[in-house]
Each structure stands twice: as C-alpha cells, then as structure tokens.
Image (tube, rainbow, N blue to C red; front, side, top):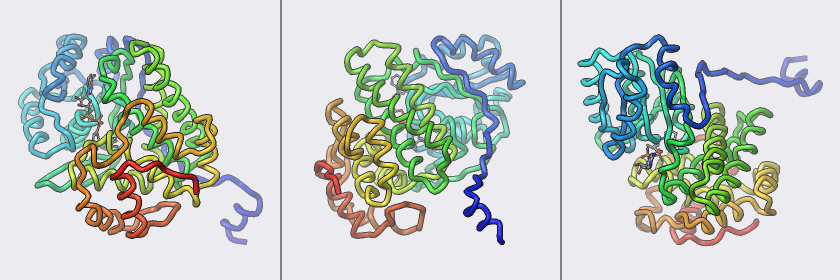
Length: 365
Ligand code: NAD
C-alpha cells in the first residue's frame, strides 16, 4: 500500500507546518519595550521608518529607543516603490544601522521588509493598522509602475510589538476597510488548499473578534477594549495569511491595487463579499462556519451588511475604478493559474467585477 492510501484509509493526519522564528508582543503600552526587544535581537543601532504623515510616530519610537535610535526615515509610500527603498537604504548605510524599526501600516512594513532583507539586518515592526504584513514572508514592490511579489524567510520581520494604543488614532474611515482587509485573510484561509485545523480555529476566532471589535468600536469610538479585540483579530488573521495560501479574493485585490492603483484596504472591503459569493458553491462548509461566526445565515451577505452598516466602501466605482477597465482586470486575474476552490473564468470575473463596480447586493446561491 502506498503512503497516500494508508493516510486516507486510517485517517492519519498528514501536513507540513513551518513555524516562523518570530517574537510577538501584544498589549497596551507595549511600545515601551521596544528597546529591550531590540536588545533581544542583538541590535544596537536602529533606524526608525514611517510614512511622511506619521513622523510623530517615528519620533515617539525613537524616544523609547534612546541611544539605540541612530536615525529616521519618513519616506515610506504605498506599494513599496524601489525609489523610496533606495533612499532608505542610503540612510541606513550612512548611519551604520543594524536594524530597522517600522512604525505604521503595511506601507511602512513593506519598506522595512525591503530594507532589512536587502541588508540582512534585523527588523522589528510596530503595526498601526490591521493589514497583517508584519506576519508574512512576502514582499510586494513596485518598479516602473509594475508590482512584483517575492517571498523568502529573510523577509519575515524578526519581532512584532502590537500596542493597542498605537491604533487608537486610526480614523474610522481607515479602521473599517483595514479591519475587513484582515477579515479577508481569515475568510480565504478557511478554504485554502493548505488549511489545517489550527489555521481554521485561528481564522474563525479572527472573524468573530473583528466583527465584535468593529461593532463595539462603533458604539464607543474611544474604546480601547474594542481596539484590542480588533487588533487581536487582525493578529490571528495575519497569522493565517502567513501560514496558508490565499485565493481569488487576494488575487483580484492584488490586480486592482497593483495595476489600477486602487487603495489596498478599501479594495478588500468592497471585493470580499463578491469573492465569497463567487466561491460559495464550492466552499459550503467554510461558508457555513463563517456565517455561524458572524451569527448570520449567509456569510457573503453578512460581510457586505457589516461594511455597509459601518459606512465602509461597497462599490468599486467609489474608490477610483473605471468600468472600462473591468475586462482588462479580469484578463489579468485569469492570466496565471492559482488555487481557488470555485475555479476562475474570464466571464465569471467580469460578472463579479461588474457587480462590485455598482455595489450590487450579494445574494444566496
Ligand atoms: P498604509 O500603511 O498605507 O496605511 C493605511 C492608512 O492608514 C494611511 O492613510 C495611513 O496614513 C493611515 N494610518 C496608519 N497608521 C495610522 C495611525 N496610527 N493613525 C492614523 N492613521 C494611520 O496601508 P495598509 O492598508 O496598512 O497596508 C497596505 C499595504 O501593505 C499595501 O501596499 C499592501 O500591498 C501591503 N500589504 C502587504 C502584505 C504582505 O504580506 N506582503 C500584507 C498586507 C498588506
């Protein structure tokens, strides 16, 4: 009997799980430990990275680092353009940095990954959105208007400090799409070909935490408890993103962001219910678990209603997409095969994008 048959017949578990060598610190006020966390990484000369609009965050982290902070760079931009990376590399080389500390959302984390992996230095991330990039070995970069993606163990940040207080300043208009961006990782993890019991459990807990965190925050926009629930959900969802392959939804958002320059998190918030509806017939078990986590009887509608009730974006036409680009986007989405439970056809994607363009209600199939 071949091993595959034995595994099937005896229902013996069989999987590969590579645990990442990454330290996670989660709590309130945890940013105070950034110096000791850097010491743990045996780094003594850190350059702090941020976007131009958030240099105050970099200043705050530099203060906690004290003399370990040898410089700052505030030029992180969306989609990690290589020109910004070149500038940051110059600063880090000039200051003889042996680490970068990224403080901000996925844009800053992307820059930190690009710099640290090129120089082979340490990378500590303090995320302020729910994007989840800090937990993956993947780096997306743009050069000459083209977005390419690479992955490797050297890209995974060495440590992450989640400080709930750092997310308290996120405006509502950023909070909702960013949280749905995180929820999308958990949703697609549940029907990933790599899904395991452990990732399923994390994904379902992530969906519950994000849903409940968003609703609690809607009732009390200053609630640190709600922010904590959201960030915890995002951490679990990001862990799923780092552990298993994603499907149609992530592919579509990659195309829409990379080629049509749509904003990352709002694109996820609009597309997720449509991608779920597209995959529904092929993922009944996962969809019913998601529906249960959302205390609803139809998962795609529940996600769409959540975004709508919270005032998040629900139509591609409202976030900068043009109807004439639907065919081109669908062509790009089907141009390279990737795992997706519902199969992927050009006509199917055109229909999906047309509905998402107008923000039509998703229906049970
Ligand atoms: P972002 O970093 O651009 O932040 C989104 C918005 O939040 C910006 O307007 C920013 O100014 C604001 N913001 C961030 N922190 C804030 C704070 N503390 N207070 C107030 N406003 C704040 O975008 P993002 O959605 O976090 O990440 C998207 C990027 O990350 C994309 O480039 C995406 O491709 C990448 N990403 C990569 C991975 C990966 O695994 N490689 C995973 C997820 C996202």
